[in-house]
Figure 1 (cartoon, rainbow, N blue to C red):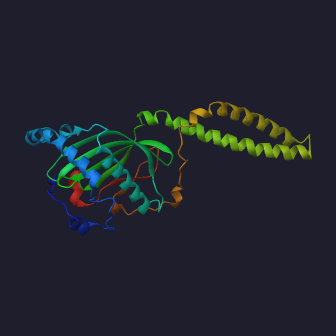
Figure 2 (figure 1 turned 180 degrees about the vertical axis):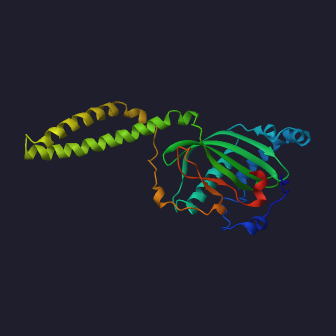
Figure 3 (figure 1 turned 30 degrees about the vertical axis):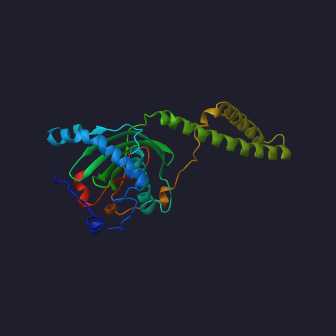
Length: 277
């Protein structure tokens, strides 16, 4: 494997970038508040550096965990989500914001290299109204913490965090509840019209039976509707027929059929970052 470079500049990245350099994806600088949390993280990491530098441990064993309440966790996790969403907005779902939303960070680890720090982030979030697990990798420069998205992929594993336990079932129930509610409304309207026209028509009898079934289902769902209240976000589904097929050189790769949610994963395509993928 090629050795990681000690420095990377805008010039290095722009030279081989096939698309306009986006300020939200590559070498993104920290603001003043983020820089303060970056320095706090480096203070903690300094105690591990000596061990990592002299150890022959496997790369995975070199990783150190970060407490999720550390102020630098949202700096890298929010960046990873925003950068991935920007890629989807530009190359797949044109001008559609927040492809991945309602995110919860589950785990964050980091390792050091000659360039800086490599963060591995496990995130649970929604995409196309389907809860899923994502693995993101963010590279930060050791001198100023500039961030670059290296990877953002959806895992086939089911969410295990508190926020999304049973969420798939709740979403299904909410959709059925809304469907039954609309069916009840529609059949009730047809029933009223049929009653005006004839009391003996076969259509009237069929509508009465249909309404009885839907009304019963509606009562059951309504009784437990309070359980659906935690789902405060809107149903977000787009039509894949209107998605763009991104150039493979953008780093976006179509997921295989094993995934519960169709879409694209991201692997940074630039060779200057290939040693981190």
